[in-house]
Image (cartoon, rainbow, N blue to C red; front, side, top):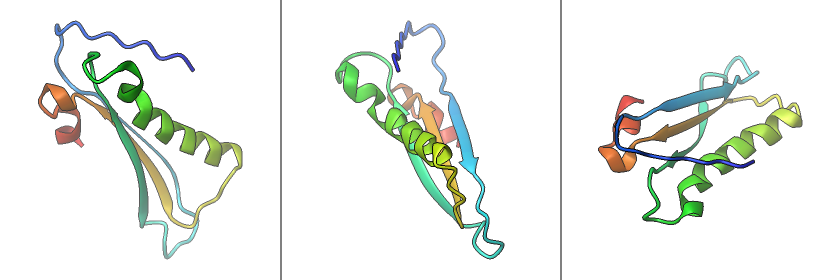
Amino acid sequence: MNVDVKFSGDHEHGFDTIAEIPGTDPKLKDEVVMVGGHSIHGRRHGRDRQRRGPVVAMEVMRILNALQVKPRRTIRIGLWTGEEQGLFGSLAT
């Protein structure tokens, strides 16, 4: 995966992405195991650090999906941006 992110400052708002693998146990499916990460704009913290959390979270979900895991509890992924621009992403979730 090659992720190229640019931030110009023209549109300062955050974006959230939520996805889940639904639980299969009728008694436990409303319980949620949360996987998440945020991405920052700019390069002040280094290129790799910016994308590590979201990439790891997406890889967890990709592997679970590839293995066709049917979890008893719901597994939810949350990805957000805008932390260093005023918590735009996380305040919206």
